[in-house]
Amino acid sequence: MKTFIQSGDILTLTPSAAVASGAGNLFGGVLFGVATNDVAASTAGEFQTCGVFTLPKTSALAISIGDRLFWDATNKVVNKTATAQVCIGVAVSDAANPSASVTVKLGAYTPSGT
Image (cartoon, rainbow, N blue to C red; front, side):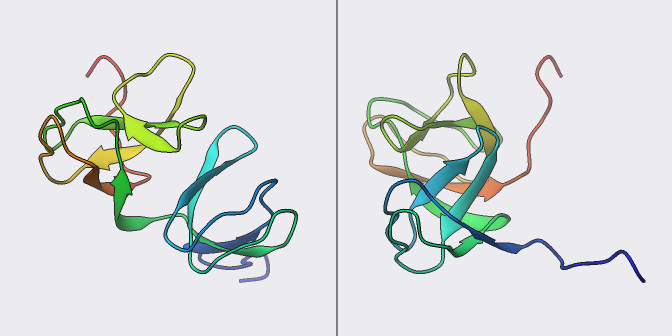
């Protein structure tokens, strides 16, 4: 097909700050990806935009499988706070309060109100 560029699972993106391999980053306020390798600030690197990842979460928060998860760009963790944050996916496992991480399916979410 003439208009196809790539599958989009992995994108080459340039973060404004350094991102460690396996860490998440938000681009342009809405595009979220997980670094496939360490990426230096202002340097292009590869970021996985779909798939299932273990990501850091707000420790004092219980998360249930199927919960919509949002990226807190300031603290570099996921949580369940929709206000002023971007939905990056859904939890595919439970995570206790307290705990350090949760398993997330990127790009999958249930729209608000359903």
